[in-house]
Length: 258
Image 1 (spheres, helix red, strand yellow):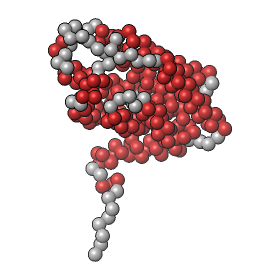
Image 2 (cartoon, one colour; image 1 turned 60 degrees about the vertical axis):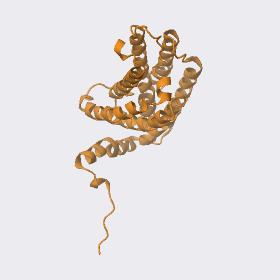
Image 3 (cartoon, one colour; image 1 turned 120 degrees about the vertical axis):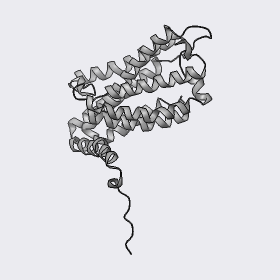
Image 4 (cartoon, one colour; image 1 turned 90 degrees about the vertical axis):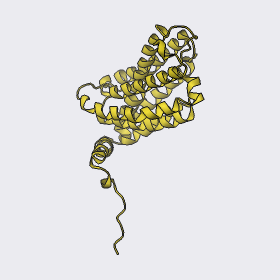
């Protein structure tokens, strides 16, 4: 009697199989095909990794986040943005002698990929809402403290603007500079090298959020390699952050003042 065949990727629904092929299989094959082990790519990888280490060190010691007050949060956001952007841009332009836009800042042609990011937001939304019922979540978000009875604006809106810019800088650093800077040497593995320092940023967050950051970082890194762009990833990150803050404000009974 014939034994049933083991399940394979081709057993998946056609739509899911097509997405897997486009955004995983093809991305891995293309990135690995372009990767080379040469003196030049070795030097590139070393320059990227050393710059990342320096940037993260500056950020750790200079960008102290004093949660609660707007001035402390604003200082943290601005210093973080500078640490994530200035050293990588200088190294890209004057050491690697590349175009900065080739490190995830592409805009042309990214429109058709909006759907996959929208799907990711829809999938993440219930998990964020569920997590928002935890005491740890409500104690953490939003970072800005607003006294009972005070209006949420304009301080909250100013904080959100800086917070969102910080997410753009973060995406450029991790999914742009690190992924695209290491891909010529490491190929697809560049994504997973990036995941480690990114996950460590979440060690002061609730454990479930830190674990989710691993999955999210792999997904966004893969999509950045596919699209050559961080912009939809930044938009997704911002949308999730807004959802988290709004959920926390709802639980605190403050959303009516928005």
